[in-house]
Amino acid sequence: MVDGAPDPAAVWDQLKKVYDPEIPVNIVDLGLVYSMDIEALPAPNPADAPAYKVGVAMTLTAPGCGMGPAIAEDAKTKILLVPGVASADVRITWEPAWNQSMISEEGKMKLGLI
Image 1 (cartoon, one colour):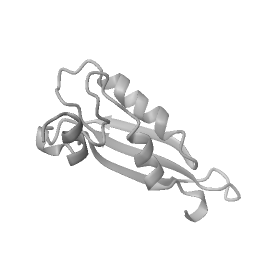
Image 2 (tube, rainbow, N blue to C red):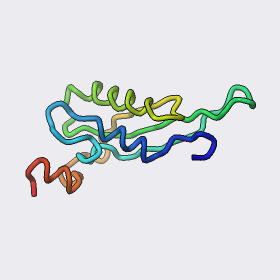
Image 3 (spheres, rainbow, N blue to C red):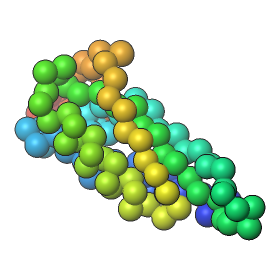
């Protein structure tokens, strides 16, 4: 990684450790994570190493899911464990609406859908 930037694969690996407590498949394999981006933050002092922010847009399986804030906070906490990540923002969105076709093949196998 250039200038200590976080490894995107490491961020995805951390997101794969986040679960909806009611579903035995991680949020990545469920297709709940729509995007993940890493951006350099402006250094307060030019001599400082750059810091990086990870932004994630995700959804939930249902708009009424009461676990949304807890799942988003779990994702944020796990992203912050990745070397080089100074801050994380996990945003829940409802567009596009989630559906079962977004589940990965691995997720579908775990859920017995294939």
